Length: 110
Image 1 (cartoon, helix red, strand yellow):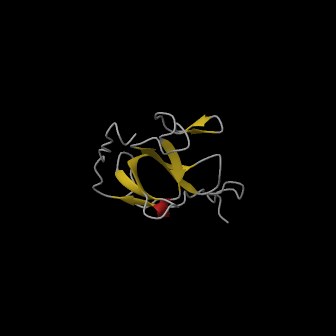
Image 2 (image 1 turned 135 degrees about the horizontal axis):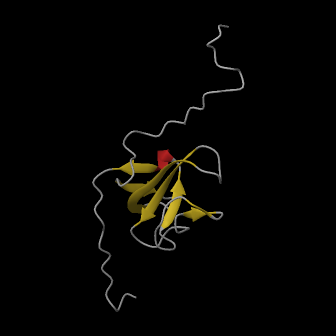
Image 3 (image 1 turned 30 degrees about the vertical axis):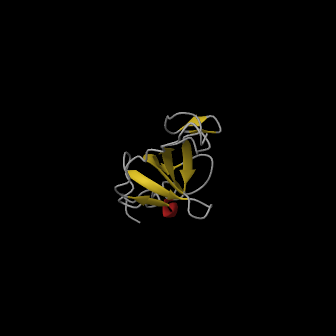
């Protein structure tokens, strides 16, 4: 060890890799646990969180199909309308040209 070696107590922390195509502001589609259901939205957060280990992707859904408003356990990661936010693992997110779908409900269908 030379005099320029870093002390052992200083460890380099490397962030887990986030896929390069998952960037803040990208349109995406999220795999659902319900067969045939795809949820569309916009990436609002990528990175580590305090609520669980590993990399998480914060999504603002187009429709109120989420679980939060961008905050979890009192910590805000991004902002969106209530029930529009969700955090998912990167492998469930597909980034692409996913325009906002207009859900046309007739008064009779509601």
